Every structure is written in C-alpha cells, then in structure tokens.
Length: 266
Image (cartoon, rainbow, N blue to C red; front, side):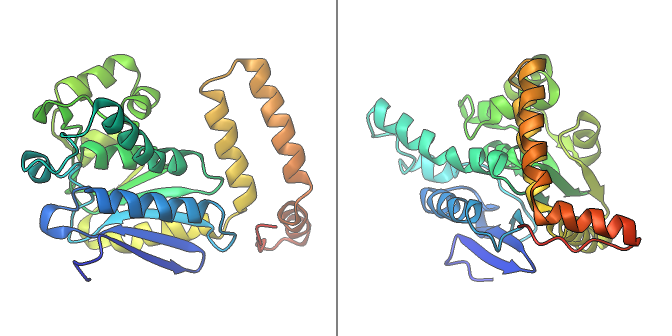
C-alpha cells in the first residue's frame, strides 16, 4: 500500500472500502485524511453502485485517533480563533454523521487498535467487527481533550450515560472481549479467520435489500430520539416505501418459488 495517500478507496461487488492509510502513525487522523474521508463518504452516500461501506485501517491498526505529534508541533489548529477551530472540527465530524445516517450499511472492520476519534468513527458505523487482539480506548482525556467526531453521542446511545462518562473520563484500555461484552463491538474473530469472516459479513450486507436496510437504519435512528407514536409514523411511511420497491417484489416471488432472492436496490 502506498503511504503517500492517506485514504485508499476500493469498490468491489458493491462494497466500498475506505482504508485509512498512515500506518507509520497507526493511521492517526490528520487534516488531509479527515478531508478525504468526508469527501469519500459524501460521494458514497449518493452512489447507487455502493451497497455497503467499510471503514478500516492499514498496517494492522484501525485508527489511533487524532495525530498527537502534529498537535504537539502546533499543526493541530491551535493557532486559529476559537470559532474557526470549532467550525473546522464540526465540519470533519460530518464524516461520523454520514456513517451513521447514510441509507446503506456501514461497517468498521477493526484489525487493531482503535482510539479517540478513530474509535468514534467506528462507533458511528452500523456494525463493528474486530480481530480478537484489538484494543480500544477513548483516549481523549489522556491528552487533555473532551472528545469529538460524535464520541459522546454514540457512546451514550450504545452504553448509557453512566458508562459513557466512565469510558470518556477514565479512558480505560479495553480488549476486544471487553468491548464486545459492553456492546461496543458486534463480532470478534481470531486473527487467522478475521479477514475471511469480516469479508463474508460485509458481503452478506452488500447482497441484501439495500433500500430496506437503509430504512431499517432510519427507523432505528428515529427510535433513539422520538416518542412511540412518532416512531410508528416513521415505520409506517418507510414500510410503505419499501413495499413499492423491486426488491420487495423480487423477495415475495422468491419466497413463493422457494429460492434465494436477487436484490437490485431499485
């Protein structure tokens, strides 16, 4: 892999793989990588050829978070006015929002350490699959920071406010088994089977009913912030929209014909 390009993109069989590619610093986020990631996700959200999005890292790591060495050298935006720093951070956080809200499945494939903003990006995905040797930590307070890229919101949604405070304030180092037990990770596989298992996991999503999966995602996101009646309304609208799709008609025929449906995302 080239170390000159901080984000690699590959689209194969409907799966867009975005690989954070700064292995010499465990794929720590810098401005260039953050900008490229945001552009790629915006494009993916509207690309009909993309049926699932994978976010992963090169060189045996996922992402170590923000580039602390760059921060220490004064390249982290510390010389900007507060308003400008805040606006820049808010813009880059759109990457997490897109992972969480785009109407297609997103998967963080975690081959190694995930920390800080890197872990926040993973939490923004619909699914997180990890190698059993991976380590996780929120890390922000270790360098005197409070958190960004949606870390606070995603943690609170996944584990509740009390546990989120613990993970953010104390920043414990978690193994993959602990992260799985907390609900931060969906699947954990041994190193020897990780590549094959994660590829199969993503492929199954990419072959699924993309439109319906997108509406499931919308339903769940809405349920986290609305009352029961509103959730019913959202479900009813999205169900009606799904009923008009070619995917639904194909699945109904396949059920009657006792065969596997061939979804086309139309």
